[in-house]
Image (cartoon, rainbow, N blue to C red; front, side):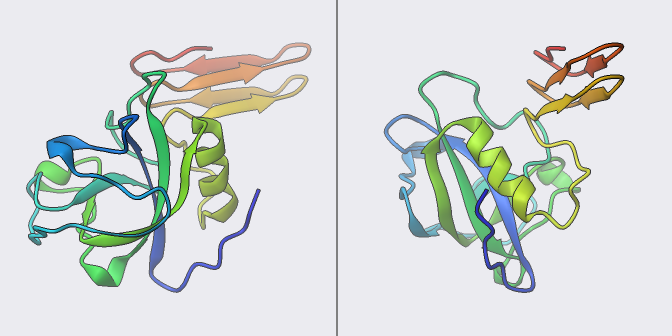
Amino acid sequence: MKKLKLRKGEILVLRTVNEDMTSHGGFKWPARGKVTCPDWKYDDACGHGLHGLPWGVGGNYCSTDADVKWLVVVVSTREGLYSHGSGDMNDKCKFASGRVVYCCGAREGALALIQANTPTPGLTRWGSITASGTRGQATASGYAGQATASGNAGQATASGNAGQA
């Protein structure tokens, strides 16, 4: 998977958009390049910002519908990222602008790009698919997680809504 040249303070954010590239309120996302929120407000409330899952980690904010498009967005934490963890931003993040670097491929491609570029590879990403070999163990937590363990004596566990093992 492609290694990105992330600058200090940049993170990758995962999100889905409708087939026509729109999200909540009709906001239209570009397939590539710069994206900016026209009504940015720096606070911990939903709305007035772009939203997603930092490093692909968080709550049930990505759609698993067959016609959604998956995006990975580079976001600078110096450009007004309001990190998840408080108020309405309990398990997602809000940001003023970013750069779309992955669009319209499969969920697995988006997750692979994030995994290839993350500073913390052990995190379980939203909807992750994990595989391990003989006697291996695989665990996926969160919404729509999938875990597969192949070979002799493998164990797989998936927790959360729509988890499959």
